[in-house]
Image: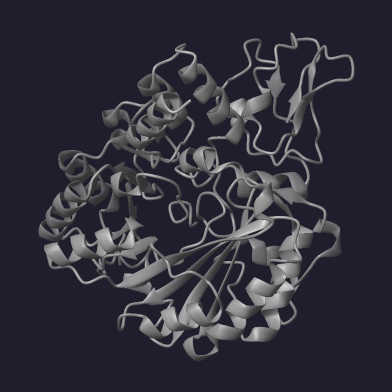
Length: 206
Length: 242
């Protein structure tokens, strides 16, 4: 999946995704225990959202429940809101030496400099080269800035548009609206803080 | 997915929850209906219990097409072929321990229909057939569900009976020798003008230098240099279960 690769729009410097992986037969020894530890470290570093696609995101499911339901098939992903949080996480993961594969998605300059600051040398990069084809069929940029935070597109364009309308009319706060949107993304990579910022900003300009 | 006309009160709450505009009001504007040919079985409307009357119900996943669409479009479902939830590819994520994309090759991920447009397999085939003669090597069915529908890896041809299948998104993943990447990128730029959807493009590079050569190739293909990406930070290491 490349569902964290193609985020777009404003304020991407407040939006970083972490993804934890392992491979059966290579680095899956005691993987549940090690994943749990990696989640603790992400929480300590300030992750605003995270989840296991099979159980749900921490914005809707208690952290302890997700951790208790981890299995060797679990895939953990989450979101940070600053480069500083990424640095904190990289430092703690390097120190813990859990052997899990860790991927950070975000603005390349920021991610590379975070790696450099931590003394980590990126192993492999997946570069986002943009959108091709009938781009006139895409939703508008403001909507995509929010929907692409769930790369699986479990946050439909129409729901974002409706939610923005409700925010603009004062029927729901940007904070509550962003949490409702985040709950639609089962992986936990939706950054509700950035969504809140985007919804509020658009309301102010409406 | 279907809507029980007996339960539906015609409030229209479910309509914005459809990713592909498969839900609409019926001719009399009394109840909502789902067009099964357009529906991609993502189950967003059902999984989130958006209907106040619980009128949205899954139809049995009793055909290969329905199962395939559901596996590709709902990330909570695991593909039996790959063992990975969702559309399932590993691209750069585990490369630090698998080395599947080594020093001499790039990985290519063509994310068809994304973001949020959807696509038919006919368009997927067009792109695959454009890639096939360029030195692009498709990954196999053990790594990507799409390969189960391909009848010829040399030409990129898919089964005729699946060409009208409508999916939310699907990834064409493969690799190319670093020296052959330009024809692949040129083919993608060319075919992008012939499809009725969009694709998001990613290129996977094991870091052996600053990738300046790749960036120059992008310049030559008029593809803007990337500003964002996914970085495998290299913390994986072997820990065998034995």
